[in-house]
Image (cartoon, rainbow, N blue to C red; front, side, top):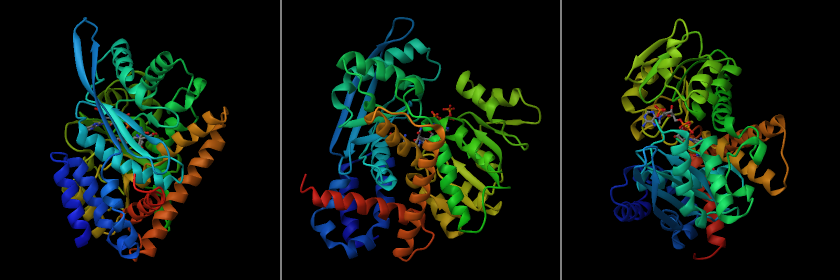
Length: 445
Ligand code: NDP
Ligand code: 2IT
């Protein structure tokens, strides 16, 4: 790493002890930015990088609620408002027992670059709670969401900070959160949250957007090698919002998705995943993936283990951070892997990324490949601001244009900096320069 950046990085890591995921995200970005600072000494003089690594505001709060048996439960809530150079803070809320400040900060930090790459006017933020929705009734989830919003409402707004979903937060949770925001503020402020229901201010395509966008980005990478999804053997991790929609789109483009997973195990379905059955089990019934295997002939379920043991030509990790390590990457490369598109945020460890890049595998990092979700959130905000709602076809067309644009910008930036095909470098530099220019112009804040 560049010596000037090394010392800034050391300061950032020392200032944020015990936040392993945040450190990982910061180090990866710093490793890309040396050449930019050679060309732009003004960024160093204005301490852009040091400022970018310190969130503008971090909010941590108590979330008390009662469970169905009347017992008091206490969780911790977070919202990290990281950077508003390009627009209001924008990013999802994650409800998962693993959530702590280091995870919220890694996600918020990556969101700054991702949102810049979309070309939309949105800054970066992220939030969530260590609340575990698994096994909770609708009434419990509602009481939790109401309590969470009773604190969060004072920090957010259409022009300030616009949360959305992430792991454990989907349409049901956004509904309860919006209802409580409306009740407290007495304002029907549609643009305060995205991922809303279609009949009350949501955007068509937002539910599908992250998974669809990941596949569109990966298809663009495949095109640079004269190929496409048609005929590929695809493995997807996860079976949540991003995974299911990535599976649907990859198969619509002619691929066969032969495996997907949840945190308990994975299924192998050589005939290609039945998306309708998967949606029924996961989205309607909120069941486990094992139940998919029980209802479909010829499917095997592997309890525990890693879905990356299944051979693939294209891998789409769509579950969670650091789910694909160097050993899994090496195994996939040996099985004939051509491309990886990250639907999740930082699913590949640093070792895994190095293995893919050394082997010449096309590698689309999450902050570029999964930007379709937040980009469509920005399209939802646009529809809300103009009190309009667009057709599915028009919105999907906009999403496709945005994803192709992100791909081309990353590729062009990698070329410009002498590393053709390095989408990690392209995404980090492309996102950084846009935010850095805006920060420089807006003065020392
Ligand atoms: P969901 O909650 O809908 O689904 C998450 C999936 O990942 C589930 O199958 C879940 O399994 C699995 N999973 C979660 N945590 C773990 C873990 N620790 N180990 C193994 N499996 C795990 O979330 P999303 O689909 O929305 O999010 C998936 C990823 O995509 C996340 O990294 C998120 O940050 C990222 N992302 C999401 C966007 C969105 O618009 N929703 C936008 C951009 C990125 P189980 O049910 O067993 O927990
Ligand atoms: O990681 C992400 O980009 C998201 N969870 C979506 C954020 C959003 O505001 O739509």
